[in-house]
Image (cartoon, rainbow, N blue to C red; front, side):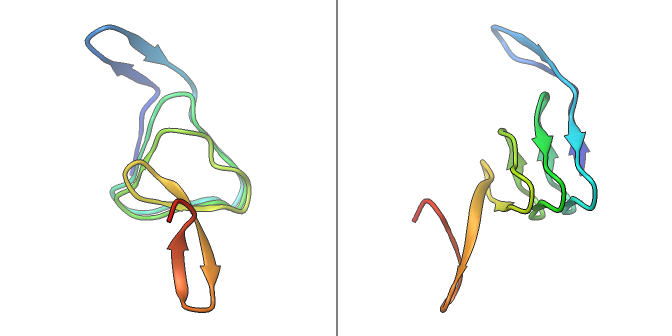
Length: 80
């Protein structure tokens, strides 16, 4: 996984601590951008791009990473 604490863009330069809570899990190949906080016991799926804070106990996946929920038919994104 890659945790970025600085980022160069064409029109700006961003700095920020990345905070990873206790027992949080970050999957292989995931990228976390500057200033993002991953709450305790949160899960980030492999190859995800985390651009926003992840609340405690939440599972996120995708590019950009979005929260997932469980239902009777499996796991689906909240945005669908």
